[in-house]
Amino acid sequence: MSEKDDLLIGARKAKRLLATGRVAGSGIRLAARRLLRREGPADGLIGEALAGELDRMKGMAMKVGQILSYFEGILPQETHAALRVLQQGVTTLPYERVQKILQEAFGEPVDDLFDRFEREPVAGASIGQVHRAWYQGDPVAVKIQYPGIVESIDGDFARLGGGISRLVSIGTAVDGRAIADEMRGRVRLECDYLLEAAAQEAFRRAFALDGRVEIPPVIGERTCTNVITTGWAEGRDFYEFASRASAAERNEAGLVLLRFAYRSLFELGTVNADPHPGNYMFPENGPVIFIDFGCTRRFSPSFLEAERELMRVVIENRTSDFYDALMATGMVAQTRGYDFDLHWRMLCHQYAPYRSDEFEFTLDYVREAMEFSGPTNPNLRKIAIAPEWVWLQRLQWGLHAVLARLRVRGPFADLMRELSALEPVPLAIADRPNGDR
View (cartoon, rainbow, N blue to C red):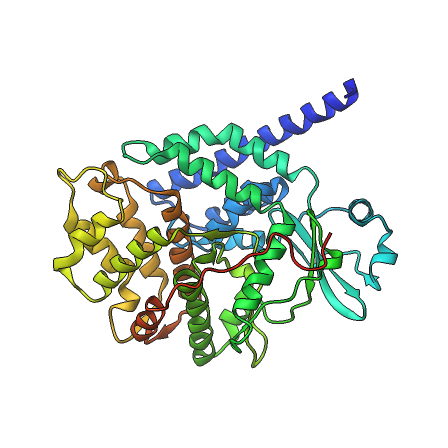
């Protein structure tokens, strides 16, 4: 490696480190304003600056921003709104770089790879950006990975991983290092588009007979490690649908999202663990379209069975069985002084949508859940959180946050009883989708 290359790499690292400092500064200002109860329009301005930095950094930084954009109760409302731009992205690769990436990936120029390829991307994400193109006469979506994104993720975790593990572990029995390593490994897997393609095809086959769900097919001939091409999906984005759809349409869509998530969990044993609003599209009078299967997580049968039983105990209000069901999950590291009543109340809140004949998801419901995770919860010092549990919570609370944004109302108890009784049929994900490189 030349001296010039060393200098360029050093400059990029220094620039990212500086950006990390600016992001941390914005977070501190938001936390201080919230603590002092000074929330207001300035939170939106800070949020816009924060969104700009996270968008430019991409990778893990942008992914965290995407989660914060819709997860109510963590930041001021104005900040959540400002961060929504991260669900589609703003900062993009120039077309010249895109051409080079495609030619290096497939050995042919863009004009030979596609009938037509639009120069401007239609969306940007944390790991890649999406262009519309045409292949063999059909419209397709081509997602191209940002160069150097794997290195940036590794660098972010190298700088922040120790802090993340200490933050997760502080004052608790949690193995913070194991959770930080799990997060790093899962995000790194998202950088292999062949794995994403295989997962997308597996979910598409599993839901092929469900007329309420549509998953675009993968175009294997134009998919490789850093490029994934799928059928084009057309529909309203989440926020347009949320603001313009009727209550009946929103309620029906909510049932589809809930059924997809919990059928994936209980029957397939594998979930798309990134239920953020940018991953759904809503055609007029059509099925819900599910896109982006980069973040999937398979659960062990023993973990799922213990969590399924605990959920049933709470939903059916079987208080006499609660202690045994909770202990079977392995979550209680220290029973002495453990507040089982508080844990019961926490789970009753979490599963409230499935404990009554009818329930309405609201932003207040999601915000109130945050109170159970605060430092005043004495059980935090006595719990043992498995890495699998982190992704289960991300699925459940991410889904609940999305349903709250849609203001979904309905009879969810019967649906959950049906879904939680499904016989496990593990999802078969091939190593590589048919026809790819």
